[in-house]
Amino acid sequence: MRELNINTSFKVYDSIDELDTETKKLMQKAIKARKTAYAPYSNFSVGAALNLDNGETITGTNQENAAYPSGLCAERVAIFYAGSQFPNAKVLKLCITASPNDRDSDIPIPPCGACRQSIAEYEFKQETAIEIYFMGAKGEIYKSDSLKNLLPFMFDKNHL
Ligand code: THU
Image (cartoon, rainbow, N blue to C red; front, top):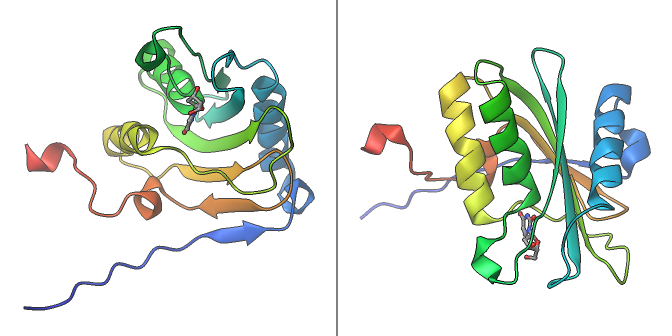
């Protein structure tokens, strides 16, 4: 028997004001998008904004459905749109903000497991890391240099 330890690492920013100008702008787009989320069932709104190496910026919000599992998370709305509209572009950076609608969460809210798996696919596809920043509605922001930090032991095409 042997023990395997996997280390992951994040940077923590005190607030959006500590981000570099470009990232701050992208997070502000995610915040703006979050306010238009279609989340009448959970009352939990998520906004995502990503930038591509072709200069495009894409936002997404969670889209819920009366048949609950038919809805989709903000991150996947954004990254699937990017993948379909700009199949050859690389995703550079993804900013995520999430909060219950009745209060401004100050806890950095990470992408769910299904979104992590989906984002991972694009890192493999484009062969470069995607920087991921996530926050609540205010307060600290966590940054991961790559999706890999969020999904140790990920399943990918090499396992097929
Ligand atoms: N949600 C996201 O948009 N992204 C995540 O990573 C976690 C959850 C959405 C799905 C649903 O509309 C609401 O948040 C509550 O789970």
